[in-house]
Length: 244
Image 1 (cartoon, rainbow, N blue to C red):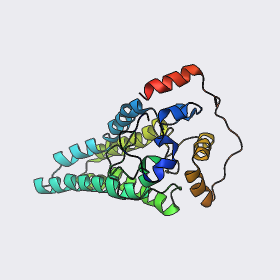
Image 2: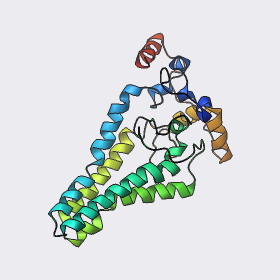
Image 3: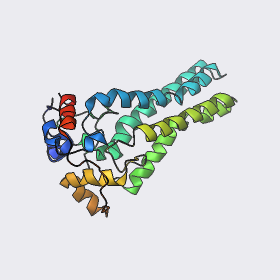
């Protein structure tokens, strides 16, 4: 992370991603997770945003060219925008993002993670994993976000554009899981794909997170597959240059 640009308070003071970059010299996790390398934010946002639009775009086109009245078209599109803002900034932020270590700094009113930078923080940081209820809420919320348009398109026989919208949403979820969720430190998200060995290593390094996960019954694997626990001088130099 390099030198902090904001004051670090709350539980963030006990989590490694908020520490100075030079304290990571004996750790190799930043080669596996986006816990440090800030210049990759553009990559993650491009993948997330670029594929996310594949679902709504054909649906919006279908609504615009449909036989709905102009006022109905406006309210259908505007309604999705309102729900998207509500889900991403209030509902999801309160029950999913608040379990992410990037949520832990009480000095920030907005989320500062590689994907959702700028999202409102409407909850309180919880270092433990999501509950079953929270996971169900997240899945329902994402389904509404992605499939909101489909009933309206079916009503006007926009079958092709409805199919393209569904396909676009599937591509978004697939791309997110394969290219982003494999690096994400919000480990209990239903979409997270970080290998257990790497997840265990990160949790072990952060006692406040480890305690919360163990209280929920989490069990660690005994194997540790991280190949390089003592990074070379070259890797240390590269990491330091990235954190400048």
